[in-house]
Amino acid sequence: MTYENFIEELLADLTLRFPEKTEFQVKRILKNNGLSMDGLLITDPSINISPTIYLPQYYEEYIDGKSISNICDGLVACYERHKVSQSIDISFFTDFSQVRDNIIFKLIHTESNQELLMDVPHITYYDLSIVFCYYLPANTCQVTSEETNATILIRNEHLIHWDETAESLFILAKKNSPRLFPPQLQRLPELLTDIWGELPEDNISMEEVSEQIPLFVLTNQSRFFGAGVLLYDNILEQCAKKLGSRFYVIPSSIHEVLLLPFSQDIHEEDLNEMVQEVNCHHVAIDEVLSDHVYLYDVERRAFIS
Image 1 (spheres, helix red, strand yellow):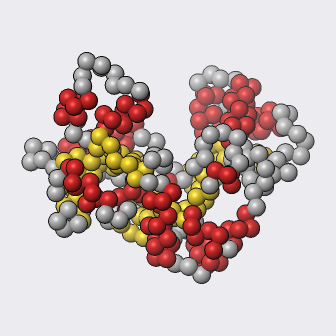
Image 2 (cartoon, rainbow, N blue to C red; image 1 turned 30 degrees about the vertical axis):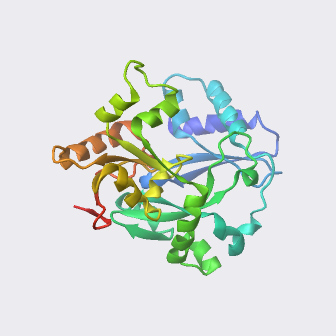
Image 3 (cartoon, rainbow, N blue to C red; image 1 turned 60 degrees about the vertical axis):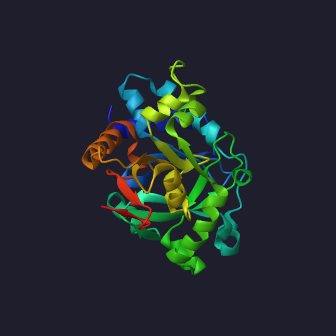
């Protein structure tokens, strides 16, 4: 079955599972790094906002042998987890005074996002770009799941309506992002302990692991768009107190970066190869930040090559 026929059968099955006036729409969604995906919007006529459910993964399940009926079961379950429980008054978005305190930034790769950057305000940061979002507080979203990091990407049309600039958004985001998403710097083993509860090998102490893996993870406490912490005031200078006057920033994803103390024994080419390998096989395309490391020099207060 072709992808187009799969979509037709999927929609036919879903139509039978929802109330008569429910609307179904498949839209092309441009995501980070030029990734384009079909997204399904299931719209309840009594609610003015709907989650986007990306369809390619469901087609892969079909190719692997899963039935349309079982795929629809999973898709409906996904919708139930992420749907909002009531309409959201979005008229506030036209009033900049109601928006300004929740404007945040995130970092994306410039070359990989040329199409997106034509449509959104941005500021260049080395070979990366700073773009801006409106962060919807949890009490605004009324989502049925525990995932509350909902954002609206700010586009050029919004700036025209607000009579603002990318520079004015950046000033606000530099205040808001640290307040809404406080920075977090941890040794990698400590972070793994937070995630797993304990290190896999109990006979190795935290100190021994930290000596063997002198990596730090820099992100925010939500681990959401955490690479943007690099832009926080004085954060790299604070990191230098733990890592030394020079250290590598390894772009593990848009959600976090790794920090590695500089050493003459470490070859930057090897680190770049590692980043490219990990990006290719272990990081989702739309979460890749960059394909090379950055060397930070605290005396110059800048990345150097």
